[in-house]
Each structure stands twice: as C-alpha cells, then as structure tokens.
Image 1 (cartoon, rainbow, N blue to C red):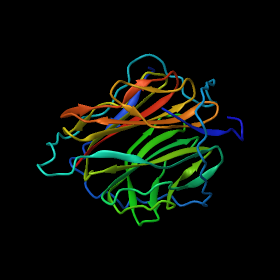
Image 2 (cartoon, one colour; image 1 turned 90 degrees about the vertical axis):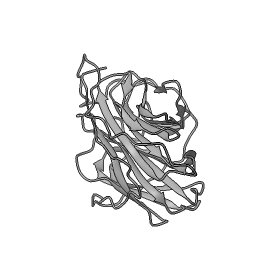
Image 3 (cartoon, rainbow, N blue to C red; image 1 turned 135 degrees about the vertical axis):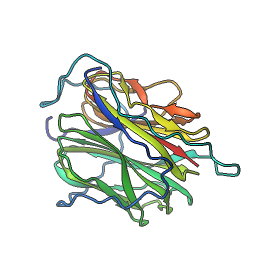
Image 4 (cartoon, rainbow, N blue to C red; image 1 turned 45 degrees about the vertical axis):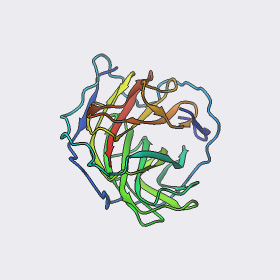
Length: 286
C-alpha cells in the first residue's frame, strides 16, 4: 500500500479458517502480556465518512470457494440473576488509525467511561507478525486478548477486554502494544453493567460476506462484533446490529464494529463485504 494514505472514520466467501473457545463466564479479565518494541505511539483524529474501494493489497491470500468455518462452540450460560444491572452500550471513548510502521499506538479518550462497566478494544493490524498484543490505560486497567484472528496473509483482527474496569476519565489514554505492523486501526468502546464475557468466536475468508461463527450468549446481554477488512467496498452489518463508526485507512482498509442485544442461545457477527476479511464476536453478560 502507498505510504501516507489518509485516515477517516465512517458511520457504519473464500476458503476460510476460524476459531472459537469456551470462556464460560469470564469476569475481571486483565493482565495480558504485551509485546516489547520501540514505542511509536500514534493516534489520529476521525474524519468524515467517505466511500472507497481498492484492489487487493500485495501479498494478500487468494483462496476461493467454500463457506467460512469456525471451531467448536462455547459453553452455554444462564441469564443474569434478578437484580443484576442490565448490560448496555455506553459509547465510543477513543479511536485511531494510521499507516506507519510501529509497534504501539496511544489513543486519547474524548469521554469518560462508566464508573462500573467494561471496556472493549478492537484492533486490526496490517502486514504484521505473530506475537503478543496487549493494552493498558491511564486508569490502571489491563486488557486481555479475547479473540485473535489472522487471515494468513500477515494481518490480524483482535478484541481485547477489561472487565469490571476502573473508570477511565475523559482525556485519559489507552496504549496498545503489538508486533511491528505497517498499519493499525484501534477503537475503544465502553459498556455499562457488563461483569462477564460468556463466549467468543472468529473466522476469516478471502471474500465476503463475513461471519464470525457462533458464540454462546445469555438473554439480556450484548453481542459485540468486529470485522477487519483488507480493501474492497464498505462493510455493512446484518439486520439487528447497530453499526459503530468504521475506521478507515484510505482507500479501503477498514475496521468495522457493531453491537446488538443478545438472546439466549448463540450469536454471531455477520455482514457483507467483497474482500479479504477477519471477523470476531464476543458475548457480554451482566
């Protein structure tokens, strides 16, 4: 990809591989180790949305045919007990995207997080490597990797979480560390009333539509999904999802995120695109 491409924030199948693993009810997640590297923190202000498309990036896989596949299912979970606070989306606190070689990125929060809640950090790394990804913030929260999906062409899409997080003030910071990457996207979203992660799943394929695979969910919870898409048309989410602002490195590398209310049983994140994708879903409960 050409150096110096602009970044913006938008409103929001080939042969595939994927994974999912049971989390049961994962509370107070934290302590993920981070990848050491020369910090080159960066953050970008969001610009207005615009449509874009691009040809396949060099080195991208070109598998074809077949539906996306995912790993085994997650453990079922029960509905929140009577009197538990109902999980709700609280807002986007920070985001940034840049095309520059780096091993870390620092985002500045534009709003405070709830006094009692959880923080989810979505990340897409382009032309990167295997290795630890971690995050911490100025409130003293640490984040654990919940989902980590590679597309087999040097790109990764992840969801990290700090469950039962301390309140993060407006003007605070979150720093993400990762193996050296030529491009990164990151977005921090806050949820109130979330005390556990009940399931997760992820998958990848060479072209759309995208689908994360199923994760167990409990009624009254929240389904949060992220899709890292390496070019092509703007992603759209399936009915029922509320799309969050999409992070875009022009012309078309994008990190799309969305959420919806969870019913009992299972849930997945899905939508449409026409290029190499990595999708992940995390289910949240009170």
